[in-house]
Image (cartoon, rainbow, N blue to C red; front, side, top):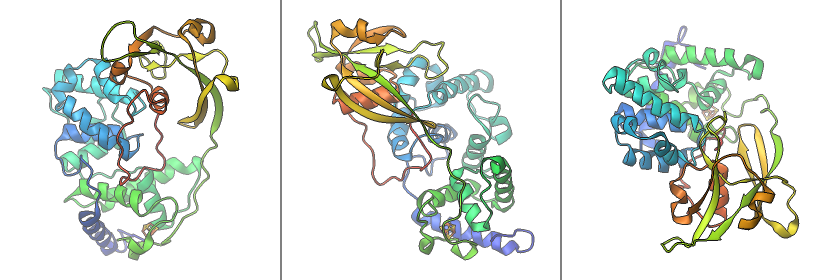
Length: 366
Ligand code: SF4
């Protein structure tokens, strides 16, 4: 247990052991070691609700296309959304884009350096502001996510309080981290805590024999946690309509997609496969089924092949529709589900993912 008041040495030792371990064992993620506030900002936004392995690939592509804050600010929203496709939670991309334009217009392209000022930008909450301020600008401020919370619940043997006490527990842990965070390398300290939670102090089977802070840990093992809220299940159907292209060119196939209206609160403007009027697809017409999780909802999706002449009678029109050549489909801002279906149907190249990267256990891809 760490007690910064009665035993200041426990806090100092915890920091030393943690940073030494981080220096030796941290994963080589592309945003690590960078002091470019823009790159750190992009990585933090991407990591909010997306698995690390997916972010690794998309982060590099994003920075190649938009290498600087001015480049992002000048881009069109559709270009930004297209590059964000597959990362999910597209509101993050819109806010990132808006914030870049705001910083160009009002701050001459320079990001604020404190968490308090960063929080005033679109899409930046307390967590992201603290992460950017500590990693990019050395502000000694704690960053507490689910991984860090789990580490300190175990180190301090603090009981899990369930939903009703979650905010209080988070405040207690944030206060503790703010008191023990070193003034030198505060960003590395925060990243080391998250790394510990993601790689050793995992929800199941924590690797306590390898843990650098085991000497100060009260539980040295799994800690009772509140049960996760139950998932809700729902069934939907999607139409996979593919036709031969009439015009000569590299693509001989065209795929029918539909743009979600801008008035939608969820994923406005993104492109999706048409929705079937009836999700009960007869066996003879069933192409595939898959599960797609968004937040606490499991969508069980039935996909059927639909001929061009059947589209009107079998699907619900919800937005502008377009037959898109297969070679161009990847450049659209597709929903995560559409990307998944097209990939499984071998109509879209799957993204390259590194097995060496650990997934954040609580993250889902929309
Ligand atoms: S000793 Fe085990 S439970 Fe404690 S912080 Fe380390 S990995 Fe987690």
